[in-house]
Amino acid sequence: MDNVAIFKALADTSRITMLRIVMAQGPISAEQLSEHLKLVPSTISHHAQKLQQAGLVFAQKHKKQVFYSANEALLASNLNQLLQQPLATELEDRRHDVYRHQVLENFIQCGRLLHIPAQRKKRRIVLEQIVQGLEPERIYSESELNVILKAWNEDVCLLRREMISEQLMRREDGLYQRILV
Image (tube, rainbow, N blue to C red):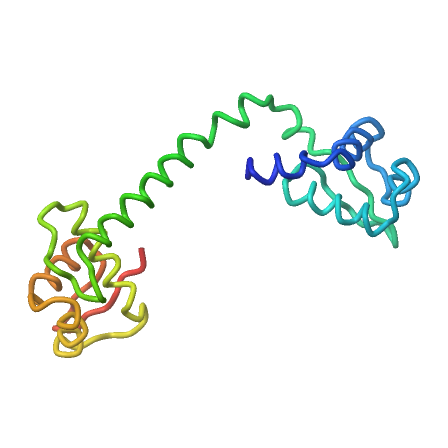
């Protein structure tokens, strides 16, 4: 459930009215909504799409008509539940993104790793960035991988070892492959 989509969908008087009608009358056709709201069918379709994307209504096609019904489960939840549940996750994600950006900015300049971070959390972020440049399905020989890693930093042995330790790459018979995370 995307709270932003819900609030955007409810930020229009026509959509709120439309939702009220759908809630009160049960499954209702687009034509009936058009008559109730005095709006052309294309406008009804536009508003209905916004409500659907937010998960507030369901659309079901029957022959040539589309009928809309309310998502009772979502509408039964109160505003407090909508605001509280994902807030911690959204804030944590945002904080992580800012932290990640700062780490990359501090350790990588002009496509080169200035030095390998001592702190494990920062080192993991840098290694994840480096490994993004490797093809997931491709098997690399040690010398091929060394050439790629050397473009980042001279200490290719440490980079390889840390990528394996962090389970970003696997090594088998002297060959390396990126692990999708």
